[in-house]
Length: 363
Image 1 (cartoon, rainbow, N blue to C red):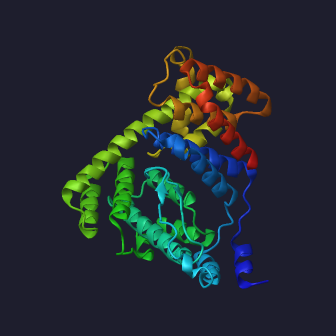
Image 2: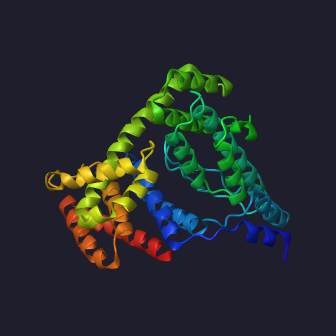
Image 3: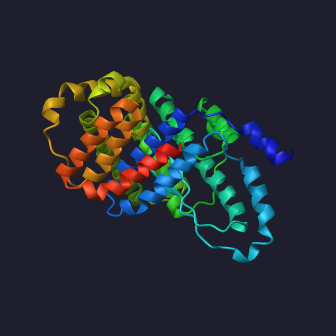
């Protein structure tokens, strides 16, 4: 057995089908709600669905950075003439505060650029986590919410298991960021992504003065002017507020689709905890679900917001079907069709729901 094969066998982790489906469900819901304002999210739907399904299938078995570079090198000489056939378009599902998932939407050659991409990904992830750890410890207290946030971020980064383990160890220590050397070679877009993540994390426990000072220091280190820093802060605060509203709406619509959710609030709370941008304890989500169910009769009368109806309906269907037993699937499908007809979206959403169904069956 080759060294590469041995490494792959050692780093592979057994992941249950249920875990893969949970990963896919949470990832798609977060992407849908995060893209709710975009006018062209449906154009990217198929690509996102396939990419998240592929990530779910690969959970626990992703190759190390060395393996990726080694495989790329084997292909480099015969494919060198291809050189740059595409560009790096790393895409954030969400802004971290509770969970972040980074999907590689790459159009790349299968040779020299693979080598560059492997190094770039690792460099960026480590730099991102370095700054997040420093922000986490800005007030001298590492809250349970902040640790939950970072663990979720790491879980959804498509990185090798052994590297993730190092990062998980680093976040448990106040000075763990010192083990993650940041890169000085960052694009303006990468700098903004890092700062957005840091401010989202700061908001998870109230953004104290100490955290504001650290955030300003990060801006100086990354050569970002104060005016742009303020715009980043305002953008993240607005994003968190809107996303919190949409997650609550998705939970409300799920209750309309799946009346038996009261008996599965534990599973629903687990998904919603992953979906939220701002950390919310699982017990708090269960309390919110109970409140939604208590007001179900009056709340179900309230119409869907036309601006967000499409992503909300798809998100709610995903959550309801994830929680449902096979016997409950038919009733949920009928309730979903009724809501789609009332919203005038039956024909428009049909191909999207079929694609979701195919992806889930593949897991």
